[in-house]
Length: 576
Ligand code: NAP
Ligand code: MG
Image 1 (cartoon, protein in one colour):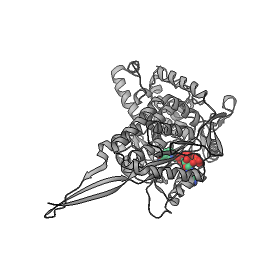
Image 2 (cartoon, protein in one colour):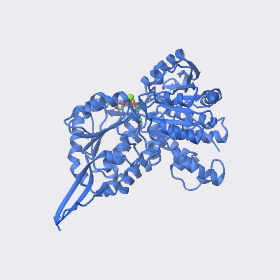
Image 3 (tube, protein in one colour):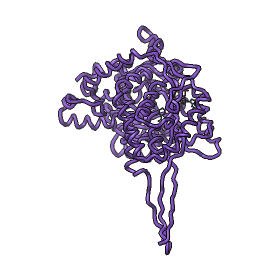
Image 4 (tube, protein in one colour):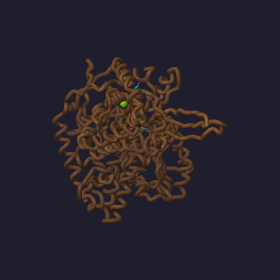
């Protein structure tokens, strides 16, 4: 079996392979893992035999990709490279819209590479996009939900058809390695389908209630969930596919009309999602896509009185500001916030240390530590501390940093100059406060000179009172600590404002104790596929507690779609 991780045994290669496909909200791992178990059962380690026939990109094929995946990705990449530097409009009311000012979208792996030219939309574009969505709302909200479902499903199919092209663009634009890039796109299509299947499973959210026992009358009561109106989707750079497409699909399938504002680092991927929705045949104005800066265009959208609800995914700071600004309207509107994390892994003295090491490394450094679910803190019981730390360092040193489109690469660059500086400042501060076990430096020589490449970094001996135990860093740095027992680990784990994901390694009984005590929305025990990362719609719905999220319900789960609708009771009476 060819692995991505040279110098590894077959098992290590396999285990680390899905590190590649690991996303937070976008980890393919669980389903991949299930598939792998089946494959292993049937044909021994690797399950290569299962991959040889007609092949479609699914979670099953992603963990141990067949040659065809690579050749198709390489072909798509070549084709995409011929299209670089073009100008892309906004899409507003079904029309391409151009602004007077433009901004360049450059690759974080090579800042000389201009991927495309995008529109610097302003206040007028914000107003026009919301007006278009408002005009489209009556027609769309009254469209039969079955028809909305079939359009969103069609859009998912279009994503599937363009997956290699889109994956190549994600890799170039975000700096994700190829498997993670394809994973982001595949998950987007699955989020679309999951929203559709929830609509169907709940029969459009129409529920027959009790009949009033009034003599001489028949009184029929129905509960109907109905859309709010214009829904705003503001998305971050790190999962520009899934975190733009997932909320948009949920809003659309439930009958809202949508305005999308992607991160300025990743406008292209979001545009591709928009194109698939448009090409599926959504009527003009039902979904709109505007680009430009968060502080001007984004703020104008937030401040607009005609917005009915919002899904914001991004940092705690911006999210809390949006929450407060959005509260200035004349009534309370739904505000779905998916924010940052400071995700802990706790390792018991009874843990399988190899599985813990693999899971932690994968979650710490997948996507260069820029997942909201990245494992950024590790608490290890004293008796196994030295052994585990040694293995963590060993595995981390084997990770390959480089151009993310290259097949053998695990870690690409961080997203932009700010993150690159953050990394250097944090590494410096932590080297003073504690001891860098591995990494700690940026790579700036030769091929790395024009990109934002940072070594994956493990730090020990940082006092637990240090501020960086509590602050999300969002770069490939993870701190490890020795604890005397699990109680102490849990206390530290919960002593943060965040509560997104968490991981545990130990006995099944300890795992239950962990689930009962941890304050986080998505939790994993004994999982080598990722200590804290690896959610997938329909498997691990994704959302956070405390400062990590506002709704208390997770995306890609059974309680998600109702967030996009308000309840209406319909009582109709007739004489008996
Ligand atoms: P960010 O800086 O907060 O930006 C997120 C989005 O908000 C971008 O589209 C940004 O536009 C926009 N924005 C900025 N200021 C705004 C304003 N005043 N009004 C309206 N919109 C505004 O986050 P990021 O750096 O892209 O993403 C990383 C963060 O997202 C991390 O904290 C991570 O943990 C979090 N995240 C959370 C989840 C989750 O599911 N919980 C998932 C992924 C990421 P510009 O790009 O134009 O500034
Ligand atoms: Mg940003």
